[in-house]
Length: 318
Length: 301
Image 1: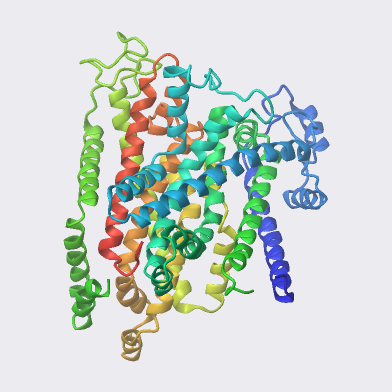
Image 2: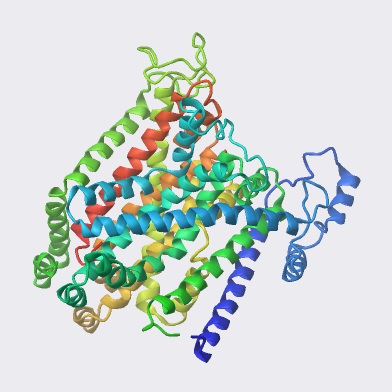
């Protein structure tokens, strides 16, 4: 599996991720720090006192020097301190929020893939039937309805119209009870987030399955008397999964983007909620930190996706 | 599939550029007409555009005015067809203004993306060399950075306003278009007719915009159509978070957000923008799918 070539490939990709992180964090850092006003301006700090505070946080230095110290610290795992909650180190906060977002996003990703591939396969093997039309319609509706609309309707239905169904778990305004919520609290936001992206998976799986089902080896497998379930799952689905893996990267991006709004609506203490709050409160160190973590996540996700190719399709080598 | 594509190919093989373009459009619309879903979407979107145009000159009430003799959260009635909002403003008027804003942002962003993406993509794909390397590296770095998050940060820096929100969304959206056009230019520049044009002394500009662009138009139109719902969704997303169009301008996103805040008092206020956004995005997606089948028959879904 892990040949020399693969290792070199992984090393190259990691270098590329690092380069991307540097460029992206630099651009975000410069952009965010060029914004007028800071977290301190709203407080009753003027003149000399403001200068002192800015000096304490190193904000009176040239922007490039500031970025350099951010960068060297970030490499050592120190993402700086919060402006809003004076001097609070960001790294532990971001790591905790990352784990919360990973809980939500990971569940949503599983739901997306499970739902999407199941729908896609069912639609493909019943092509041009009512099953096909229903499932493809659900897919199009899924990625056309904005996630915040789905989330709003979800809260409306379960907290306002049918509060008894969920035993009042979904309340208004929605808020997680603990850092990681309960399974019931997790389910609605995860399903909504997963449903939103599952439409893309359904489409890709359906198209790929239709393509694969026409291949000669499927006919051969049928001809030698294999059950259609075996043919579908073992022969067809395995090859139809390759295009699905190719959209995993974009899926992770969709889920991250969607989680920003879902976490805000459902009161989930994750990275997405922090990102919006940090912008609204001008706590720019956190904005840069969260953005960099997102870029790192996506870079690693894309790398894993490319490595997954070799597992699913042994013909691909790096 | 190839059989459908052939007539269009034959038509421009023997004709001038002008005739080829007519062929593309006529051929595309003939195929689009057979797609009922896309036609229904087109009808809906035409009505929506009409509504937005009407809203320039007339809305039932002033969408930004807090009406003197109106209660907040009035239920739909003859006087206020969609009811009133948390400040007692007429929701139908605000929804009409929201339609305007959504369409302006959608189409405007699409035009910016079209211009920037086509020019950059053509230059990269045609000239190759270091220009292509620089552009490709840049695009690859940003590949996989969530566009909405970039738009949020950029929009804050640019300041609030309609044009700025379009620029902020275009900041990442042009890259997909550039990549597509670059790929098209890459393959088209190797065709014989480009060689013939170059041999007959055509300049680069003429070859790029007179020969390569018209032959890549199908996929470009399709891609430009898909930018519209993305831009509308992004604007609604930003406005929902309170980071979008400045109040008192009404956006479907901000109405949805105000509606969500008022959920226990008046659930219907959130329903209108939810329905409007969903149906509009659905229509643009159906239209885009239809256009892809009609103008880009080689690319199967």
